[in-house]
Each structure stands twice: as C-alpha cells, then as structure tokens.
Image 1 (tube, helix red, strand yellow):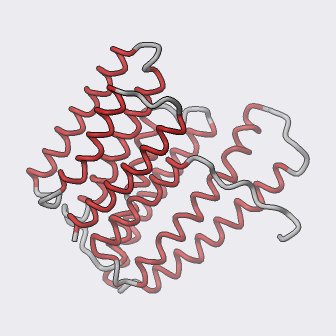
Image 2: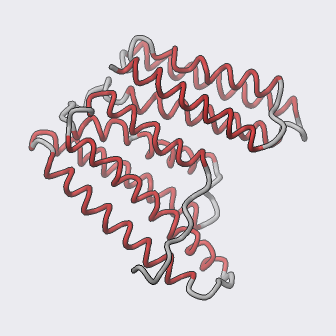
Length: 264
C-alpha cells in the first residue's frame, strides 16, 4: 500500500464544509457524550474519500478518456481501502451503540447510503450538477446529523430531523447563491430573481417545519449570516471565486456555531 500514493485530497472547500456541518449539528443534538456517535464522522469522511477516489475514474472510464499510467489502479485500490476502513469504523459504531439505538441508527445510515449511491451514480453519468440529483446528494449528507444523534440513543422523532433540516437549508442556500454568482455577469437580473425565489421557498419550508415543531426555538438566528451573505454577495459580488470561498467559510462557521447553540 505504501508503494502506491493515494489520490490527491479533494480541494473543494465547499464539499468539505458540507460534509462537516451536519456532523457538528448531530453532536450538538445529543451525540457529544456517546462513543458510538463519535465514530460516525470518521466513517463518513472515509466514504467521502472513497467517492472522491472512485468516481473520477468511473467518469473517465465511461467517457473512454485515456488515463495516466497507474491512474485506475491507484484510485481503485485506495477507494476500496477507504470503503473497507469505513465499514470497520461503522461496525464499531454499531457495536458501541446501545442495542435499542441500533435500529434507528441503521435506518438513518441505510437511507443516507442509498442517497449517496444515487448521487455517485449521477456523477458518473455526468448528471451530478443536475439540481434534482444534487438535492438528493445534499439530503443524504444532511442525514449525518440525525444519524449521529440516533447512534447516541435519540429516538426518531420530528425534532431529531431538525438538525438535518437546518443543514440542508444552509446547503440549498449556498448552492443557489453560488449558482447565481456564476451567471451574475451574464444575466444579472435573472440570476438575482432566481436566487431570491430560491431563498423565499427555502424560508417558507423552514417556517413550516418550525410551525410543526421540528426546529429548535432559535433556529432562525443561524440563518442571519446566511441571508447577510446572500444580500451582500448579490449587491456587491466578490471579485473572484477565491473570495466567494473565503466569505463562505466565515458564513459556514458562523452558521454552524449558532445552529449548535440553538440545538443544545
């Protein structure tokens, strides 16, 4: 294994951010004191690395593109290693969880895995940027939050999914804002209208969940930096993609901190 260097780590800061946010929310929702809950994040990271290793190879193979020598072997070998380690760590989480918590925990894990598999297949087929498949992928990632809380023994009730809804709300806001930024110089009015419409729909969905009792009392505070980023970013767009990423990093950190405090 040491003779075969691993594939480079993903450079997309947004992907890492979206992976980590629901983990923190799940821990804040009840998983901090559970050994089983703390084993879920490394398992999820390993699955993410496996996706990053295998999917690019599968895309090139589908498109029949030539690959550098050793490219396929390296990605398949490390992808399989990441998946094997993920299975071992996840098995440890299942064994560590209380017997009564294993059913809900496995239900959440199975659902998240199914959504992740659908998204991976869409990426291989060149449909990963389709909003429908992207939504499924983001929904699967957001389920890390209730999965972690379920591993800690939280029952599968509507409040358990509040952490997932908050994470998914942030994800959808970020995606709509970034897509608007990408087309802002080409069609500024259309980009702004579509971004505003997406945020109005998102706000309506979150308010409905809050009225249903699925969100914590102060959930709205977490979205103050998110809305501020959107308004500021549309009114005074960043000069380049790097600035977009830097702004988003601060917004993600503020959102996560406030959401975690609201969930406690």
